[in-house]
Structures are given as structure tokens and as C-alpha cells.
Image 1 (cartoon, rainbow, N blue to C red):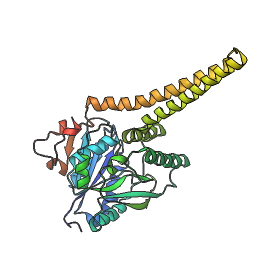
Image 2 (cartoon, rainbow, N blue to C red):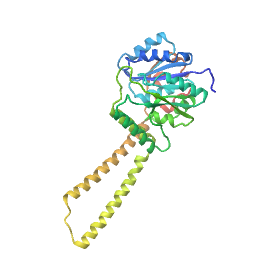
Image 3 (cartoon, helix red, strand yellow):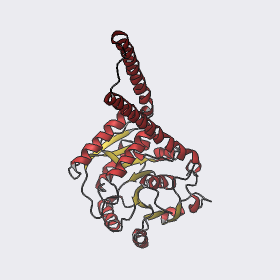
Image 4 (cartoon, rainbow, N blue to C red):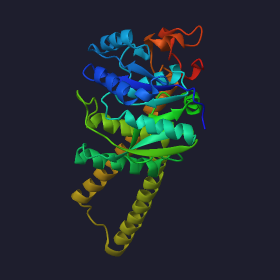
Length: 338
């Protein structure tokens, strides 16, 4: 059993969430009152344009367990989570959404399993997604199926998001990963260690609007598949070989037809169909290559995953000595380790 003297950090990325921040804090304080000496809240502001930061700073005046990591602009949720993983020094971290679709009371079960069973990665499984549209449920299920079929070694359970408790040993491993294209669901599973799922019902948002649309989700899915599988590249070798065999067989058929029946006039429609078909195959294969080359270009440039403009609250006193928050994230691979 793990020690009783521990700290669990609730890491909450926010972007224009002024409607939900206060409700989130009050709900967490109510639901996790029994663990008030062990819980801290770390908001990561991902370049909000509203008064989200101002609300958090006012809450900090009344509560010394709230910290704020403010990014210099909007880098995306995965970058915001990476900033928290690099800077937060706690025995365990729980990423969760500010809209309370990740119920705080489930964190009690996470911590119980983490402490008593010594499970390093306790993840939430959405057992009831009736609040989501039929299209979203179908596309989500399809993504998990395709990802796990294509992924070389890393598998992620179905209906599992970022909501989970991860032990410090996993956090320290994630700090060593240098990639800029960060698909956190896959990265959480990559280190291995012990893992266990906890089922929960995902409620509706308490307020505000989701920042995700189908186009963003589509690109997010592409990032995940490209980051963890090279099969989309390999499959075009097989497709090319198969088409080559068909072309060779057709060539022999034409030769045989000419020998047996003389020269025939080729049909316009059939020729056009073949040209369009092969052209589309080539464009698709070039597009797949482009997806990988684009991400490879970003990795080679070595630009930061995020840039922090300021850190306030208790976390500001925990930063490694000599670390300047304005330069954190300049090179993710060279982060100062805790």
C-alpha cells in the first residue's frame, strides 16, 4: 500500500471557460472534501481570450491550493497537458475537463485503487454515452477500433479519454518523450506499467460550449493514427503491388486479344476510367506520405510544444531552481526534470 502522505494534482486545461471555472472549483471542493489536504488544482490556461484567467486569479486569493499555468497563446489541449506534466510535481496527476463531464467523485475511486492496489494508471471508462449524439458514438467507436488495429504495439481501451490517474513514475517517463505531435491518449499507454479501468457515466456539460467539432476531431484522430502506426505507409506498397499485378495481367490479355483477333480500337470510356482510377490512387498515396512528412517536418524544426508566460499559486514555488517560466517548453526534450 502506498504512503498516506501524498499529493494528487487535478490538472485542468481551460480555453475560454469563464462560465464553468467557479462551478468546477466549488464542486471539486464539495465532492473531494475528505481529501482536501491531499488535493491541489492546477489550471492550464491555453490562451483564453475571455476573463477565464481573471476568475482563476480571484479564486486563488481565497484558496491556496489553486495554481495557474498560463500559456503565451493557444497551443492546443495536448500542449497544455504537456506543460502540466513537465511542471507539476505531485505523487499522481489526474487530467480532467473543467465542464464536469469528468465527475470529481470518481477521483475518489481512482485514488483508492492507486493506493490500495498500487495500480499506476487508473483510467475512466465511459459506460454510458447516451448524452453524445449517435454520430459521435459511432465515429468514436470506429476510431478506437481502427487505432488498435493499426497501432504497432500501443493499444488504448475503447471509450477512454484523458480522465485518469497516472502515477509519478509514468509522468517522469512522459517527460522523456521528445515528440512535438503529442497524442496524449496514446502517450499515457505507451510507458506500460499496471493499468485498470473504472466505469463511470459521463454527464452533460454544466455550462458553455464544447470547443471540439467534427473537423477538429478528424484531425485529432489522424494525429493519433500517424503518431503510433506506420501501417498506412506500408499498405500502399501492397496496393501498388496488387495494381501492378492487375496491370500485368491486363497487358497479357491485350497481347493475346491482338494475336487472336487483330488490332482493336481502344474504348474511350474504359481508358478514361483506368486513368482516373490510377490517378486517384496516386493522389491518395501522396496524401498519406504528406501526412507523415508534415509531422516529420515539425519534429525536425524542434519548435517548442508550448511556451509559458507565467505561473502563479503554490506551483510557482515548486519550480526547479533557476527555471525561468518564460522559457519553459523552448525544447521539450531538454526540460529540467524534477
